[in-house]
Structure formats: C-alpha cells, structure tokens
Figure (tube, one colour):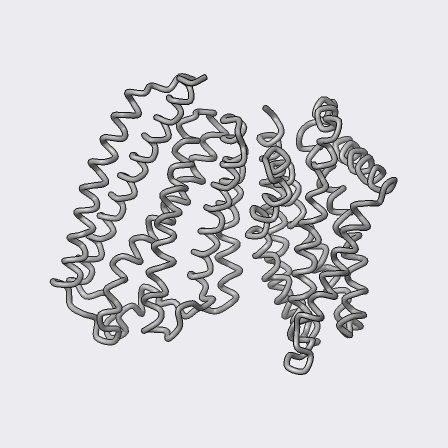
Amino acid sequence: MNVDPNRAQVLIRRGWRITLVALLAVASVMVLALRFTPTEVRQGLAQKIFYIHAPSAWCAFLAVTLTGIASILYLWLGDRHFDRFAATSAEVGTVFCAVVLTSGPIWGKPIWGTWWTWDARLSLTLFLFFLLLGYQVLRSAIRVPTERARLAAVVGIMAMVLVPFIHLSVYLFRGLHPTPIVLKPSAPSLDPEMLRTLLFSFASFTLLYVGLVTLAYGIRLAQEAREQGNA
Amino acid sequence: MVEALRLALAIAAKDLRAEMRSRTSFLSAAMFAALLLVVFNFARDPTAVATIDLAPGILWVTVAFAAVVAMNRGFAVERENHAFDGLLLAPVSREVLFLGKYLANLTFVLLVEAIALPLFVLFFNVDLSHALPGLLATLLLATAGLVSVGTLFSAIVVRTRFAELMLPVLLLPFMVPPLVFAVQITMRLLTGRALSEVAGGLRLLVLYDVAFITVSLLLFSAVVDE
C-alpha cells in the first residue's frame, strides 16, 4: 500500500499546531493551579502535583486502551492505519506513563514519607510501563513491516487482557493510594475551584495526547514514505 | 472434537518424543531449576529470616524462571531445517496445532517442576504432609496458564532477533498475576491454614487459565499465518 508523503506533511503540521495549543493550555493549568486554586489543607503545596499526575495517568490509560482496540481492529480489518495508530499511541502512552511514575514519587515523599511503595495503583502503572516498553522492544526487533504489525497486535491484545488481572493481583497487596473519595478528607467531594482546575487539566492533557499522537503518526508516515522511496 | 484432541496429542507426542531422544533441554531446564534453588538458599541470611517466610516466593520464582527457559525451546527447535513449515502444511487447524504445542510445553514444564518440588522440600526443609494436594493443584493451575501465554509468545519471539532475551521481557509481566495468586495460596497452605482460605486464590488461577488459554488459542493463527 502506498504512502502519500504530502499526507504525512499535513499531519505533522497539524500535530505541531495541536501540540503547541495543548502545551499552552498545560502551562495555563500550572498558572491556574498555583495561583488561582486554593491550597489543600492537609497536604499543602505537594497536592498541586495532582493536576499533572492524575491527567497524565488518564492519558496513559487512554493510550493503552486505544492501543489494544487498534490492535484488535488491525487483526480484524488488516488496515495498516490501525497498526500505525497502535504503535504511535503506545509511544505517547509511554511518555505519559513516565510522567505518572516520576510525578508520583515527588508527591509521595512528603505525603507518604517514601519515594516508592508497592501500592496497588502504583504497581499497576509500573506494569503498564513495562508492557508498553515490551511492546515497543518487540516492534523494534522485527524487520518485515506486515509481520511486525501482526505480532505486535497479538501482544497488544494480550496486554489488554492482562491489565485487569494485574489490577486484581496488585490489589492483594492492599494500597495506600488515595481514592477519589478521600481526596479531601474534610468534605465528601472536591472543592469546586479545584475541580475546575482539574477538569481543565484533564482537557489540556487529552489535547496534548491528541497532538502528540497526530505528530508522531505523521512522522511515522513520513518515515514509511521515505523507505518506500528508497526501495 | 475428539479428532482434534487426537491430532493435538499426536503433535505433542512428536515434540516429546524428539525431546526424549536427546534430553538436552530437559536436563538443562531441570538443572537450571535445581541451581536456582541452591542460589536462593545462599542468597538469604538463615539466621535473620525464617525459611517459611521465603519458601513460597523461592518456589514460585524458580517455577517462573524454569518455565521461561523451558519454553524458549518450544518453537526454537522447529526453526532448525524449517521444520515448522512442515508442521504448518499439515492438514490440521491452527487451534489444534497450538493445542499440540501447548500440551507438549505443559508436560515439559510439569516434568521440570516434578524434579524441582522434591528438591525444594529437601533443601528448605518444608513440611508438605498436609499441603501437598493443595500445592499440586496450585502448581497445575498456575502452570497451565503460564504455559499458554508462553507457548504463544515463544511462537512470536522466534520471528525476532534476540529471541532468548525477548521471551522473558514479554512474558514476565504476564507471570505476575498467577505468581501473586500462587504465592498467597502456597503461603497459606504451608502455614497449615484451612483449605477454604485458598479457594478464592484457586478460583482466580482458574479464571486466568480460562481467559489466557482462550485468547492464546484465538490469536495463534494471527501469529503463524503470513
């Protein structure tokens, strides 16, 4: 199947534009969170990292889910677009996963008193990170594109089936992680101003995910076009 | 259905017969398991930690690593002389082919465990008099799930570079849930708790087995068909 180099350029340009808008939105989330959102009573400033941490976690899980779905669609329909999307989404998901795994300990040290603990959600995210890396290591070890796509899709689907089991098993080690309800122990729900900042942050990060995926997809397409030109 | 099972058993028998003639991989896998147990023994401070606290973990890590080593063999042997192409041309469905390879791997890993378990009892002085039936059931259930994922993945990694390294990298995350369930069950069995306390863990192992044997069976044709 031929790849149109112009299409790649269009996607790269569009990806850049969306990413820049998203980065601006993320920057304003920081300003909003630090300057115009009340500070949490018990956790103090440490809680601010939550506006980066939770939306990144959301994006990482979104990326993994979409990689799994795209893998199923690839095996079902055989359309290369799904394979490219699965690979791209896994790449971007790895970045968000890394953000979750680094921002978590920064918060954990002052609040839990330890950088790392084998809490259920923490372990789950770590395993997601390993699965995403494994998926990409596998991709890099297969040269033939169609074979790479097929085998990667199989591993992508297997990983999606595994996630609930990992969730189940890490829960057997009871966790310390705050659940949405105990986020603010004094009140049953989140303060409206905090909620506003959080929702804005979720939207910004999701936009960032869309921008990065579009950009990376365009780059992947351009690479394929170049390989085609060389062949 | 019966016919499919007969064909799968024929494929499994072929694999095991080939293995029995050389015994190289079986002996090395069994040796590897024995060596792991020895290494674990020297990697702990016997005056500081009671054996019973470490024993379940040692048993299951040994099982997991030995299974990885054993399953690297499954499709690697088929690569020589393009034997796998012949197998693919055989007039059997892909599901039967997978089942055959799966049964061969399962037998292989269970045999390695049959050697590792007595050594584990001997080296770590574990009292299995009450725990044995429960432990055997746990070994069987955990291995059944591990080997199904392992069989599928070993068919994938033979098509990559660095296959021997790729298998553990892909497979170990998949070993975590059965390992966690099995360690918790074993811990309870070894401390003489009631069988009803391990029923939940056994159910989770069955759930894992059903899910992954089904998915592996369905995905196998996507792995081997061009």
